[in-house]
Length: 283
Ligand code: MBD
Ligand code: FE
Image: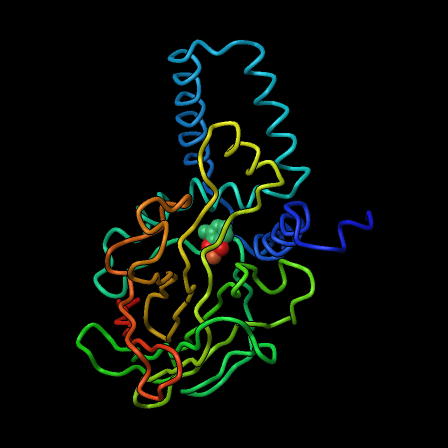
């Protein structure tokens, strides 16, 4: 490791950590059916062949593609690339029939096992954590509005600089990550801060693609959450803030109108608050 790698967040640093986290999770993953592998791989390759014909790819472009793909692996940016440019369609297909809380992509920065609280929590944060204080509260229910007890509401989000704990250096391990287990009333209340808009790393392979194509690297400010309960379909989603930048041009195409919050000044007089409920579909 070079000296500069320790100084600040880098694409290779966050990429390596995201790849490690994903690899741990994927080891427990299910095998994929052979017939579906054949059908999906055949169609995926055919779609790529069509793109090559349509654009009359040159050898210079083919070599640029090959070099870039190699670099994505070296940077550890496969989780980032896939979650930014592919996951939103997987989520759309998988959750097409859901009636309850609206889902969106998980992204590369979820970590299971965050510090656990009952009903109400202040997320782990640094002394004088920068950002507007924010109270995020609501109720986990079934589709008829009955409260769900012992639901787990996991919340994780970036800090005021747009960085996630465990994926950027110098941030305490569980900063701005926590889990609330609901009581009989199904309620949860997180005291946290509003995150900043997030720019995906610009110094790695994903950033190189964005620069080469003249795109931008921004996601709107967002809160990630995952809600799970016995007998219910889990929901993974994100919430955004009304009036925030990049709601209309999220690089990860993960914004849905139902997921945009309209916070109000907090009753406590300190910062802002919002109520958002999670009706869960039956499993
Ligand atoms: C993020 O914070 C994120 O939510 C996604 C989807 C991709 C990269 C970084
Ligand atoms: Fe995120």
